[in-house]
Image (cartoon, rainbow, N blue to C red; front, top):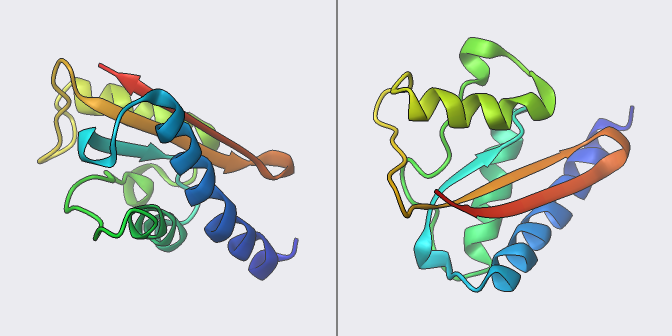
Length: 121
C-alpha cells in the first residue's frame, strides 16, 4: 500500500464529498450534531473532519466526532453503524443523539470509494 498517498487522497477528497453531500441535503453545517466516520486511523479522521469544518470557515466542534477505535480497533465501515448503535444505547460517555438531530455518516475504503450520507434522526 501507498500509505502517504492514501492519507493525502482521503484528506483532500473526503471533506469535499461530505461537503457536497451536506449541500445537496438542504441542511447547513450548523445543523450537524454528529459525524460518524469510518475509523481506520484516529489522526486521519480528525484531520478529515477538521478540514470539512475548515471548508465552512469554522473550527471543529468538541464532541462532534465520537471515536471507538481505541476500544474496538479498525472495524472498517462497520464502525459507522456500530457507533450509531452504541450512542443510541448510551454506551459511549458524553455522546447522545436526539430526535431531529442531523448526523453525517461517512467512509473511505476499499478501492478508495468515498461514501457520505446525511441523516435526520
